[in-house]
Image (cartoon, rainbow, N blue to C red; front, side):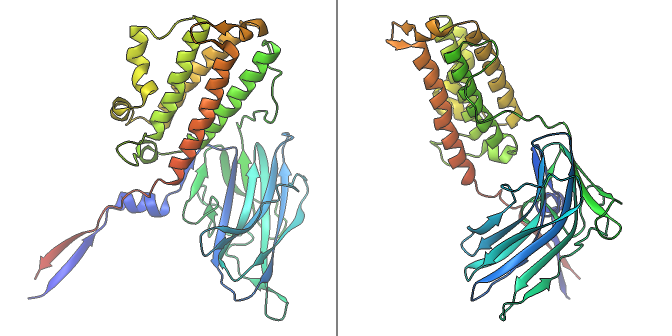
Length: 377
């Protein structure tokens, strides 16, 4: 009598964790290949590729990029052409040059597109210096994209910037095109519907007095950073609780909305939460065990929708007031309206740091164990 062991795998888990790209929202996307490389001495490398851009968006750009990943999982070299962006509508050849040293583990390289437009790529070439200082070619699979895109996937290339995390961006279509720089096909990433927010400026908000405009722009900048940090997190990440005293990231976003709601009634209506408002907001405001119990099981958009609704009212109400009101002091606590909203701003900043800290330390989701069934014969 012999015993055969049949191993049953959870198919959905394998597909999601090992093969299927995660779909996110972003204003840029990239594609990549990775090769393992170790060397006892420093070596130079060159990545060369052809690219062009068709767009009416002034901020749109493309790049070819390379990253050396070190043995300690830190970045040893990185260049994405951000300081010399590709914007030409004509095919041109571009080069990224870098160093691979004795601490290197792998080299990841590819192309990227940013904002709206059509971004074309073709004819990738990689050269690494040998012991004699001569650049030798290294094989890149489907380097000229002659094997065409299949249902949004680029054969032999990874979607995203890491082979461990495959990422599709819903704002981008991926397809092959016959207007190649070399051969029959080129790769096209087409971005549409991406809204570009103006950054790096304070004030000048339509309909707001000068100091209030400054505050609105700073509040909005921080909210954008919070939203950018969390918007593509999945349910496991949003609900992950590091320990019994910690807070979930979803609850922290809800807390930001609750604190801002409190300062709305405090500054705009000169009062504190009434009993009905406490029922709605108190658990989120306190972030104690009640918050840990209540704020879970919702996707991140649930919390962001509430946060955005609260913010819309903040901006609307602030625009109804002027700089003289901003300077008025709330006598109960001897603080000005301006200081109250400064506190809302720095409160966002504080919890953004907390969210970033927690996000980086979320462990991978637990793997579903294999089930072994013995079949006797």
